[in-house]
Image (cartoon, rainbow, N blue to C red):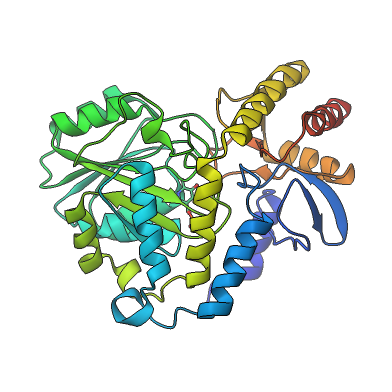
Length: 384
Ligand SMILES: *Cc1c(COP(=O)(O)O)cnc(C)c1O
């Protein structure tokens, strides 16, 4: 007997947890058209405002005219195009690691890398707030999945010290996607060295945003964090404004993944036109100092202006600035009332975040103006 989906959906609705797709009819940006209405949006990961950049779109068009759209095959057949190769080389050089491998999405990359390196006799030590794709990767690998308290390195160390797993891997988001705070990368690497573990860093929200030239979390500190234990993931669909993900690390690691990572081997290569777009985007990221400086100013402005609100911004130094309102119904009400006023700011609810911490996840972009933030805060004040 099939489960009764009507009942299941009604229950989700009763819990204010029912989700549905909304149709965007404009380009991505701070001004979007959704189902016929215009909105000021605080809801993309397009941190540098590159998703609809005409030069990046043009790079994709040029490549499409020359090479077509479809890659036509997986990378190990004939799908591995010179543009993919060029992107991997440029990326590795940009982040300062020996070698890199392009995946079609960050989700696929996380699944592919973790299941290649870990099996039933191994253990993954994961921050409790890691992205869902890392949770799924751990489950799929069959490894012992140990979730340590968020950013609690004592908890992590205790678990590492008592583990008898053959291979250990510590995995962490670098910028936590629903809270906006940063992982303690140098300390994580120290622990990985001390306990002979891999360190897997998912920099989906850091690449392009952090570091002098946008090279991401590894370049946030001096000296730059480098180690043969390090596996670095950047996604190209967020700040880079394109699609895909790149894993970087030692040359041996990359060659091993080429031979083992099932989500890379058994899938059609990304369209080469997207690699061309990503290569162009890397140029904008490297030269994006002004965009990043403006983003920093926007963050400071929001934090100052939001102090008058009854809800608290989480302690975040990044463009992810969550405003915690608590229960699902309040989060939904505020989101709906903001939409009525022409502001798009979705409510993030469990199970994406822990029960009782429903929030409005304000996501800033270098394409925002200071006045956009004022408009948001004034609208929120009116809804108290
Ligand atoms: C978005 C995200 C991913 C998935 O990347 P996609 O390219 O969108 O599949 C992985 N990890 C984190 C932390 C993310 O925020």
